Length: 139
Image (cartoon, rainbow, N blue to C red; front, side, top):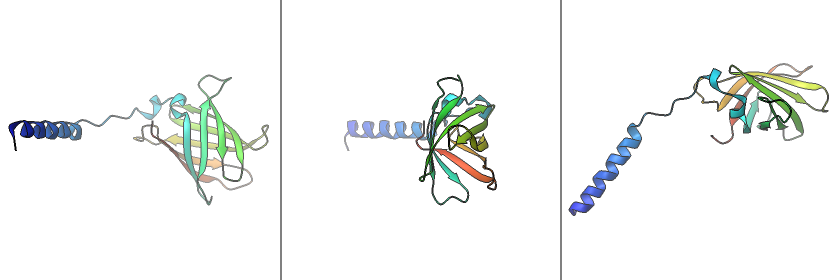
């Protein structure tokens, strides 16, 4: 192996080692995550449901710091509004655009970098159902 080939190999190994040994990016505390960081597409698993649901969140045009979006259950698409306060997530789902059909109460999972939210979905007269939301694509 020539000297230039050995030097190139050593540089490549050093670069690779630097990448492996570099400190991982730290996640913000859940209390530092804002509603703005929740914008985008989420996969939702609700206990008792046969399939994953898709949730799309975007900024609410009328309420700064809040979110608005759509929940696709596979059998229907429903408007939602959501808020995040100190790591506590609240979402309201409507089926007719006027009345709340379900309230979701959850928390950003510590160490998930805002990529996972878990909690409970309350939809009367149905029993409370645990849920887990995971960002569809990492930000």
